[in-house]
Length: 97
Image 1 (spheres, one colour):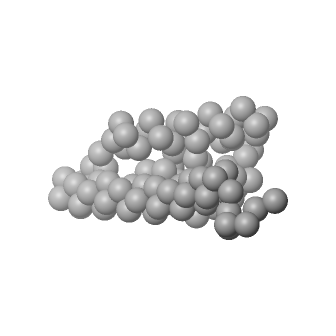
Image 2 (image 1 turned 120 degrees about the horizontal axis):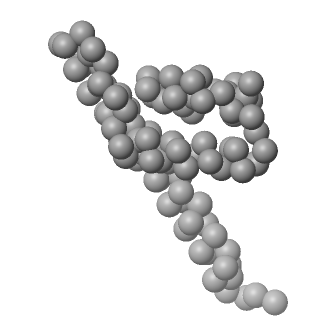
């Protein structure tokens, strides 16, 4: 029986949810900046540079989670979306074969 509001566990769960949302927004901003940088380099040189290591590492983790869930992901389609920063524009089913 509580008399003084939320329990410690509820407060921690709310704080973690807020932090996860903030991290997701920050990540999207970083990935967008990296994509814009690749676009600018492509425009000036005529050749699109490879995806940077940070983006590759994070998106490989996402891909591994989907594969561990038993999904059959089309790698080429997935990495094409990552290159143009559209990886979260579609549901996971879009990337399945």
